[in-house]
Length: 158
Length: 158
DNA sequence: GGAGATTAGGTTATAATGTTGCAATTCTAC
DNA sequence: GTAGAATTGCAACATTATAACCTAATCTCC
Ligand SMILES: [Zn+2]
Ligand SMILES: [Zn+2]
Ligand SMILES: [Zn+2]
Ligand SMILES: [Zn+2]
Image (cartoon, rainbow over all chains, first blue to last red; front, top):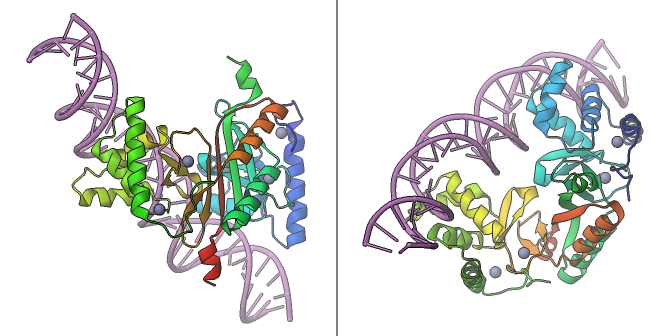
């Protein structure tokens, strides 16, 4: 299981580590972590809530970056390709990956109240995939699981 | 595992059975399966491919139904609430449920080539949910899993 | 069967999300 | 330096989904 989002932690460390892992990964892959791309990654990591592409536009604009939809989508596509962020389809939103570099399915719990998302270990999803491949003869290439509900904090805040 | 979509079958039977189960379920729940709602259900079941809301509009129009987005979305929301259809978030599309009435997570394999979707047994997803609840203290209310890849037919058609 | 409540549908407009196409620029490799 | 590739800027557009407001149908209870 990836780090627990619900425990207090130094979130600057989350951001820094995300950026530094991104740098490493880009070097390895011969990809370029350009200013927009890095800034988008940082903004996605601003907190542990999935963020919409259009939420990023004004923030980029404030900082003098070009801010048209294609800019943001291109940066996000780049980060998705490298496995640095995941897309939460049910929210049309994006969130930083807690263990980029290791290929793995997107698997998250999202709190419907506060919006925070926790990446989950996806071993069980792999089982579903293997089972489907065996029983149906399909070939699985991508996997995503999204759980929705209440996080510990929001359960208490009744 | 729900019926296997990749086996030849009398698809009219799929549609008929979907409609008749819908009728039963609506009676049980005191809900009304109005003409638009039934027709939308039938159109969703036209084949085993997830269908977009906007694909339904012209078809409804042909048949003299009102065809504005709210009409279709209201019908789809109704069917979703009753568990008669599932939403495939990664495609912004909808597909008939193969075993409505029994509460269960949405769990599908979708072929990226032909677009056909196969509903899967979701027991493993429940395990993920229980594990997350135990280890993180979250409360899971909804679950969805989407696998993407190639179906048996499209693998052969190389 | 009629008044009032509830549910469903019609209509128009608009919001939110995502894409295409092309020109200009920047980087990389030779 | 220069050719080719990758990246960015920019404008328009496409797709998906919802808001707001009103009318019509249906249900409930007397
Ligand atoms: Zn953090
Ligand atoms: Zn991840
Ligand atoms: Zn069928
Ligand atoms: Zn189902």
